[in-house]
Image (cartoon, rainbow, N blue to C red; front, side, top):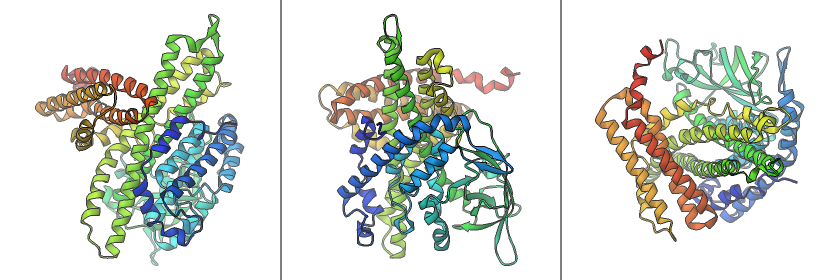
Length: 573
């Protein structure tokens, strides 16, 4: 009986390495919650033990219940008839089981029926759910809707919505995108207006809304007539009642179990979440940070599933009187998949820890304000965590989603012609992976979001500290390769600054982000290799490959290959 937690040695490795002491202590209010809730942890060790037990439950459900239903969910898909969306039978069964297991409120406060888990632990669950059925993640993984309400709404809204999110009675959706407002959310036109009594109503259209049939919708709407920018937008919560018309669901390449809806709001009653005019400037940014890591987890889950399918097939398929896994060209592809998954996982869970720190520090600052304590120290922590999170979340979404597409592509190639057939799971995984580097911000938008951090060398202090460490055995030669990558990075940076060409900077930023991201991951893997011999091969392979890519990126920038792109209008005639 497969368990997607206990049988995944690398996921277990990352769980055992987590340093969440500060995060958990803040999340548990210094473990004072144990005085009110008998099931709350009394110390860090108790919390970790509890997290592990829950993740084992998720691993069991994912491997033995959700995964066997994924193919039929994909075949049947969500349906739309007479204005009503219906989940596939397998999707409904999985949601029901996850609700009975009390897993639909993992990150919600205990007072509303949630488990009060850190995001990092929740993301481990999301990774396993995604491995089992990527489309189910788009329902299970929308617990962030409840989390946003818990973070910013008033007590009345929390009491009204959160217990039902935690029980699984409600599912949610973020209604942000519109026909003319995709990546540019400042262009949102859906309007929110008040009647004479001050009640809010929504009017307009939203498009490409994941799980748009959800019971509760978080809607970005324009509250300030005449405005055209972010300062005129606010966030609202509303029910998906009869005033919200599902105009259609999209017929998609993949993730068929997840309905993507076009919604029409017809004077829909709504409640303001948080402060007016802060919808995009504060609340959507909060949501997007969490959405980016959510897609990272989904990408990881799909990658793991594709690797397992490819490995299984390569061991079973015989050609030339031996299993094809023994063919060097095939075994090398599998090794490359495994290395990329492990490197992605190292980056991913570091990103999650930083996101947890940022949010917990911000909560702590709110407490300090109410208690009139000095904010100097906590503000410094917030500044640091915010800066790093703003870089790592788009970087993670970029690298993991692109990697998922490459891994599923190669996994299908290993299957040969059979992989192109619907009878094999890899065909579905290949289709499911394609959306990961599109939604919640395309890879190109992630490059834009991460470029500032990369160009400003925001991790320099961490890199310098890691350079000074003593590494065991002959790992020092790997450190030398990382330092060579840093020299390449600085050389590219100097070239860009000397050139003083904004358009060239923008085009070359992708190469800079890739080099800088690889440096960070290389340091993470080197630290792992220093404490666990099993990680030496992973670190060596990744670092050497990254160095080769960095050299290529350097040549691309300095040979001014991008000069042609600056004349695209002429070239593309």
